[in-house]
Length: 174
Figure 1 (cartoon, rainbow, N blue to C red):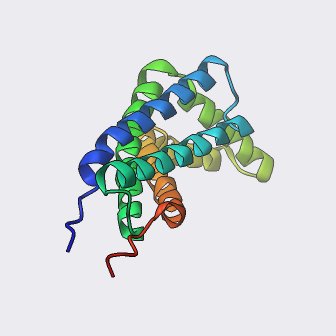
Figure 2 (figure 1 turned 30 degrees about the vertical axis):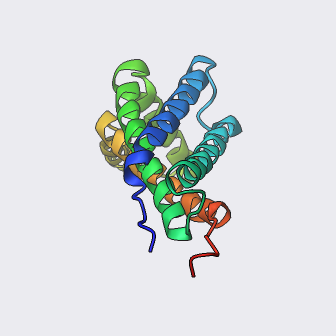
Figure 3 (figure 1 turned 60 degrees about the vertical axis):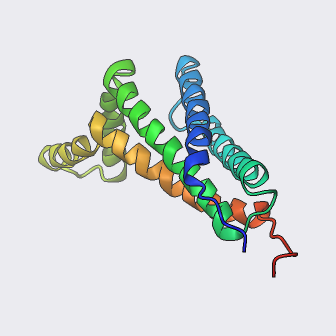
C-alpha cells in the first residue's frame, strides 16, 4: 500500500504565497481608494479560489505522484487556506492599527447611519449602546480575529468545492 503524504508541510508555502497575493490585492484596493461595499472586493474570492486550486493541484502533482483522493485534496486546500487566513488576520490587524487608522471610525459612522435609517425612532441612548457594542467588535485585534475566522470559513467552503474537481484517484490501486 502506498504511503499517503500529509498536505500540512507543502501547504505552508502555498498559504504564504496565497496570503501575500491577497494582501497585495487589499493594498491595491486601499491605494485606489475602492469603497468598502464595492463589487471589486469580490475579486479577492476569485484570487482565493484560484490560489486554493493551484495549491491542491501542486500538491497532487508534486507531492502525491499525480493522484489525490477527495480527503487529501480538501486537506491541501484547507491547510493552504489556514496559513493564508493567518497571514490575512495579522495583516488586517496591522492595516487597521497602523495604515488605515480611520477605518474603525468610518465603520462606526456607517453603523450609526444604518441604525438611524432602519429605525429613525431610536433614542440617543439606544444608539450609543449599540455603537459601544459595535466598537467592541471593531477594534484592530477583533478585526484581525474576525478576518482570520471569516477567511478560514470561506477558504474551507471553497476547498470543499474545489477538491471535487481537483481529485484524481489512482484506479490501479483498488
